[in-house]
Every structure is written in structure tokens, then in C-alpha cells.
Length: 547
Image (tube, rainbow, N blue to C red; front, side, top):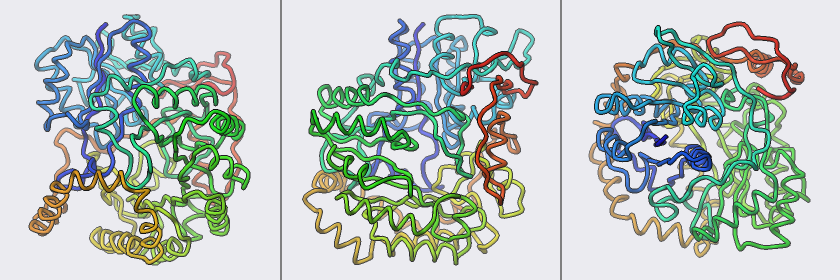
């Protein structure tokens, strides 16, 4: 079967403003690239189309025509919440032109909501819930729909049928490398965040699935509880492949938590030290759960920068949303990172329930006191499958605008009661960002690394006309942009009030995560998970840890 996998452009910017984010960072869609190589391995010709790619045209129609040009039998759309309606518009166009094409949607948004998506959008034939390889291969093989796990579909009578969740892939080394060669413009047209690398070209890798922790704001409905990793040898050979085939010399590991399996990381570092590849990499660590020895090993292996999720520096906010992490541990971890000769990046979230101007002030003061080499603060956006979802939609702690296109961490869709307006939140956000990048500490560190940043500076210089045009646009249209932001209308077909689907285990995790009394998570009982329509579970025997 001929398959085309699509990464929709989505709504990746602020209302009324052009999307210039891709000038600073354009990431390959690893999810559909992984599925493409898997399907090709099993004999199904597969094409990729990235609507945010360097050669993609503007607009749904133009991108849909390129998808049609691949002559697909099956089209798969991998969509986040903010890109979902863009994917729907593309599906509508495809069905109008070629009604016989089968269209399946997957990824986190549909995995966290399930059956109601099919009720609302008739142009979507199937939903792939959770891990996609098995479900997509069964569809491409033409297996009877009723025999495909992880699938939601309509039967002959139009009734929505929800298949059971299938067992997760336990050995990730069985998967081929993502189909980088199918991505138009890779690697030259894709680039890592500015000033986060010293060598070009860059690429992203994901070497694990899942996360062993439960944060209040994180959606884990795709991989649920099970945490699995590629081996050190597989990861080393993957890096080597990217270097030799595409000239890549820097990797950003986008695992939820790269160092969760210390044995694997130690083995990988030892391989990179024993047989150097001449590559650098960045990765994420857990605050308070690292060691001087581990950081020194990462440095010797080629690590440039490590990031850590801090979220907030207000003690009350940390206890509520980042249990188990203290400010003293954060400060100690940053000191350890710098002592190892690594760069430290802090990741923060502004606007969680309970946030106030005072809590942001505490965070801003703390950020400047840490001497972080880089900082990223996102605007909080609730996710359907996150433990905090019910609290956000209840209205008890703030006002929520349920507009999927705005739920991209670039807009304040949730306004805690501690703020008078979203304009106040934007002003405070901009104040903090400017304060950090204008600080003497940051400017001094940046100036010392001008030569190390030469490729980032070259990238900025190459795109200077677009940057200047953007600055002039924003300056000349400030009032119109503010008006567009305030009066932005929700997509006319987007439903509201849909309820997330969580397995019993994730429901238990959510309760524990949101409880004022933090408790440890109990082991998963060996029972199968109910289907996404909420019908009772069947108590067949199951391997512990499978979903």
C-alpha cells in the first residue's frame, strides 16, 4: 500500500503575527520519519510531507496538492493539539479531491481524547491511539479493522469501534533509524535552536519512549507508564550514521529524560570516549538526580549543554507542580554542571495554576542568580491528558480559553486568578525575558563564546532581511496585532468540552500528582487497559508493564 505521512503546519504563532519561529529553530518531524522507515522496512512505499519544512508552500491547499501528487492509498496525519485543525482542513481537501483515500490521525491529541474525535470529524477514517508502528503496519497490510489494536474506526453501521491497546514495543533497537533521507531539505534546511551548538550540521534524536515521572502539566497518554530506551550501541551507531550519511556533527537528544537509565548513558559515554565521533550533543537531566561523575562523563563524551526542568522558583509552586525538586538542589545541580565544564540550561513554565506576579518575580530573581547559560520559559498551555487538566477547566483557579490553535505554549490560554488580564501576563513575561538577556552575566557569557556561536551568527546573517522585515512589521502594526490577538476567533468546526480519556493507571497517577500529600506510585497491576471508549476492561493475562 502506498502511504504518505504528513506533519501539518498548525498554528505555531501568536494571532495576527507571521510565523518567524522557524528562523530560530526548525526541527524534523521525527515521529512520522520513524513510522516511514518502519513501513518501508515491511514493504510499503512511504512518502513524507512536512508542512513546516524548508520547501513547503504556504496554505492548506498547496500542501494538500503536494500530498495528492504522491498518489497515496493511505494518508497519516501526526498532529498536536495546536496543529490538529490544520490537519482537519487538509483532510477535508484530500477527501474532496479523492474520496477513496483513507485518512488516519495519530499522536498525542487524538490519543488523549479518543472516540469523540471521530464523532466530530467525519473526514477522518481512523484514529491511531498510542504507539503507532503496529497499528499503521496492520492498516497498510490490509488487515481486517476489527483485528487491529490501538485503532478507532467506524463499522458498517457507522458505530465507532474502539480496539484494545496493544502491547508496547519492548525492544526499541528493532526499529530502523528514522527516514531522514525522505525529508526534503534535511539536514541543511533544518536547524537547532540558535546558540545551542558549536558545530554544524545539527539533527535531533529520540532514544527512549515514555518518562518514569509524573508532572502535573505533562500528557503521557501516548506511551503511558512504560519507559523503554534504545541501547547504548544502537544510539552510538545512529549518531555515526547521521555523521557519515548527512554530515551531522551535533545532536539534540529530545528524550523526555535522557539520563533516566544511568547504566545506558554510562555505556554510551564510554563508547563515545573510546571511539570518538567528533560530535557534540545536548540532553536533559533530572535536577537533584545526577552526580559529578555522570556530568564529567557526559563532558568527556562530547556533551555541550544539559537542560533541566525547573518550571518555577517559587517554593509553593514547586511543591504543587514539581514535587521532589528543591531550590537548593537546583542551585547545587547548576554548580555541578558548570564544574564539569558544561553549559546549563533552565526550563521554566509561566502561568500554571497558582501563579501570580509575585511568584514570577521569585522565579525571575532566582534565574538571574543561577548564572544559567541559557533559559527557556514557555507560556503554560493545558494538555488534555495531563493530571492538571480538570483543575484548569473547572474555573476554580483561572480562566481557560479552549482554542486548540492557540494551545501551543506561545499564548496565555490559561489566566490564573492572580492576574488581572492576559495583557498583564504578556507584559510580565516580556519583562523577565528582556531582564535575563540584558543581564551582565548573560552578555558576558555570550561575548566569550562569539567564535563558538559563529554558525548561529552566520544563520542569522543569512536571514537578516527576513529578521529586519519582521521587526518593521511588528513595529508598524502593533495596535492591529494586539487587536487581532484579543479578537481571534476559534475555528468554526472545533468542538469544546471534550473529556480526556485516561487508563485507570494514568487516572491513579493524576490523582497522586495533584494530591497535596505526595505519595509514591504503586506498581502497575497485571491487567489489560480498557479501550478508549471507556468500556470495561477484559481481565486477560498481561505481561506486567505492558499497556
